[in-house]
Amino acid sequence: MSNDLAGDTEFLGLERLRGTGYFEFTVTPQLSRMDGRLYGGTAIAVSVAVAELVSERSALWMTTQFVSTVETGTPVGVEAEILAPGKRTNQVRVTGKSPTGAVVFASLGATGHHRDSGLNGVFETRPTVTSPDDSTGWTSPFAGMREAAGDAIGTDLGFNRVLELRGASIVDHPDPGPGRTCLWVRRRDGAAVTPALAAYMADMVPMSVGRALGVLAGGTSLDNSIRIGEFVDTEWVLLDLRPHLAAGDYGHGTAHVWSADGRLMATASQTSTMMRFDPDNLPWNRTT
Amino acid sequence: MSNDLAGDTEFLGLERLRGTGYFEFTVTPQLSRMDGRLYGGTAIAVSVAVAELVSERSALWMTTQFVSTVETGTPVGVEAEILAPGKRTNQVRVTGKSPTGAVVFASLGATGHHRDSGLNGVFETRPTVTSPDDSTGWTSPFAGMREAAGDAIGTDLGFNRVLELRGASIVDHPDPGPGRTCLWVRRRDGAAVTPALAAYMADMVPMSVGRALGVLAGGTSLDNSIRIGEFVDTEWVLLDLRPHLAAGDYGHGTAHVWSADGRLMATASQTSTMMRFDPDNLPWNRTT
Image (tube, rainbow over all chains, first blue to last red):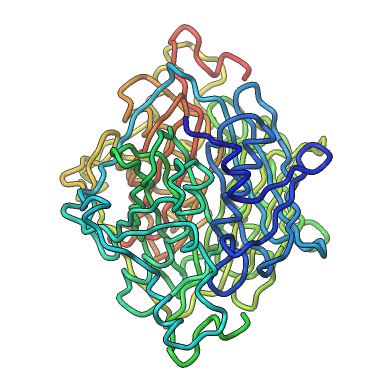
């Protein structure tokens, strides 16, 4: 298992405070969205990391709900509680709060000890795609719009600071449909992808729902969820986005996380509010 | 939208107590598992129903974590809180407690108003299966074992009291793989399936993981999650179970919920602990 807790702690800037289960991190530029607020992928990555630290077990599943937001530079206090301390499996709760005490995110999840000789299997098929070397650089479809809009915040915020993304061409898809999107993703520093980092990377389902709808649309996540299997050492992961449906301006979908050598390590999913974009009224120029 | 809140309240035996957001229900036989404890599908159905009642909006997404359990006959107190009261979307938290005050289940989710002219689409393909009339009666693979074991609890507990299940033959599957299982499910009283009832029905992913593994195995859910789209009036739903992976005795997978006429209304997912069954030591004869 590739659970590099020290690496996660460093990436997220997590500090363990006095008292069991209390942590703090600051919303640095790499932990922000492009609009200068806490990135949802950060909140679930922090939840996975502190759940693993407190329970001394591997994360199995985590759901993170976004309640309010904070801006880049803000310190966030994080409490991790073990609600049901089973011998093998722990049910955990993680709560992130702003300096004013407002709940920023609320998470539920579980951690556990994988049994070495336990039941194992993968029941999904990986899409056949071009290799990272044969895939092209990829940036968010909104980055260009944002630059065109002459936005003053700059392009130094967001996961692009620390992640390299390449758009893979899909040669053959096991479950074809609108919006299927495959991205190769790695840390720019080349470190192996942990469950917490996979959760940080997988917060891209709303983008794929927009692509499936065939309109210029973006989404605001209501939650990030991840279900975690066996991780292997891998620098590149293939993010295999499969949007499911949209109804009344809400969207749902999933992202499979594959290792470079084709192992399904995790499946993520999200619900989001969807909005059509009007180039004259871009979302990072308003307050929601 | 088919959100029959009165019907859900009656099915679940929900009583609204004095004070905003307080409810109670009793774990009746139809709300129990076959082993005489609270059924996980009940907990998420209750969470969906009370979230809709408190927020006066449709449920969009719900995750329910199982913290402890209670036996058939126990009253469960339920608190529903609106954590973030947006104009259109509400982030909610639901907590179920036993008479001793112990947390039984904890849920996070969102409710909202679907925009009539909002973004809509379905990006998944329904398996081609036999119709309900051409499908055969289906009971849990463990029901027979349980009877064979001469279990004294009787067969009057569980969702079979109120649901009819038929195993559909898969003619063509858009995403083939081990364990793919399609079940037609309806309420025995013929009432239309609501989001809460779909959540009650969809708690069957661990069974499909067991089938995918090809061993006699069952699972105990760590959570139930559902993402909800547009519901139409439908008596039968097709539960389209797609197990994803198992690792170290933990399993993950999803269930698509289709209307009889082929609309994707919701997608559910679960993580569970998996265990091989030993016929001489059946799980309902032990205390976990």
